[in-house]
Length: 251
Length: 229
Ligand code: HEM
Ligand code: FES
Image (cartoon, rainbow over the protein chains, first blue to last red):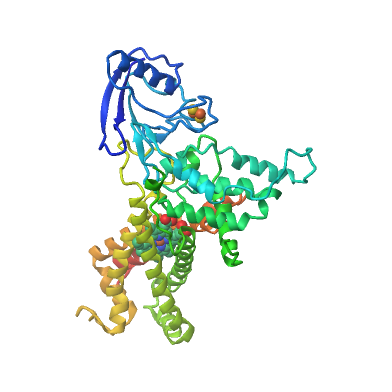
């Protein structure tokens, strides 16, 4: 298949950046989106041009590095897949594909399609951990955890921290990411101790970093490659509310 | 590199707390709309506003309602101010916009809350001129009014004018849009989410939004087409 690509090119953080158009012929529908980008880059290199910079690592949907905004959707048109898992068969022959980096005040562009997602790490640093030493792996079932809770914690923990929620949100809000991290720990006994302090610290950091406010549009849930549910946002709203009402002091 | 990310501004009132306050004000306004609609529908029961006048009389003499009037004003102001601040903040949270139109599938009403909100606000100002300010004596009733300054006559004068009736009807349409998302959004804001009940909440939201929008629309339609003095 043949495609036309409109790709955001930006030399570095200071550069203004602009879109460049590339015609790419004989793209195999079996290629992943990133393989198609590799193919494009090999052509650019052979023509002596600068290849397009994009983030990637595992290429199997588990690391969350590959975030590209494709045709108006983070990770492209197919739900529940990361960019590296997206296949070219989801595009039409001769389609024009607009390829952009995540756009958010909290994610400045480093180069081309690569953005700096340090903000998400900053939020984790603010409270996404358990302070006590939980020791080495224990025997299964030596800490009793209701099945429901462990399942829910896992549903939250599938978040790969790619930032698609921020990219999809009209408001650039990081609520789904933060909520998943808050829930993943707060639902388990080891994390419960600090749960209300954690939620306050992580929300405070999220605000400080300049992410937008949630208005419950739920584009994040729709476009999350891991189908993290907005029920965790509700849970965070609930947890934050009760931690404020109970006046839990943040230490 | 790290520092550049930070806006380094701690919010005095956190994003979530602002949403709680906004939703509380919004829910109060939603309750008010029910009361307002219930009394207003008395205008069209065909007794030249007699029952309506009695109801208004009862309400205006009630000290609790007097206090609630101030609460209502506060509710509107708080809701609107936080709404505008939120929208501005969110606009700035994405300094460079996307080129491709955003295609994530979401409820269309949810994306346009500020737009429907601003339409409601403009309507609100007009509405205060038509009714509330006349009652307070800030604005004179047009001379076409045959009788005294009661609300029933104001309704005849206002809604007899197709332009005003049209503006009211359009505003109610957007009010309905606002309420459809507002209702379910407020539940989410307070963390009331449950897989079993979410469908139910959405159905109630639709029913509420339709009831309010249609309910209020009946009144101008009645005065424009069906009322003969
Ligand atoms: C009778 C009038 C109104 C009622 C009953 C009402 C009710 C509500 C409710 C319950 C919400 C949901 C809050 C939440 O998500 O937690 C909401 C959201 C909103 N309202 Fe209103 N509202 C009214 C008028 C207005 C006006 C005049 C504005 C003007 C600017 C406005 C702007 C907004 C905005 C921007 C949101 C979205 C907030 C967000 O979730 O980000 N509303 N409204
Ligand atoms: S490269 Fe790891 S998730 Fe796509």
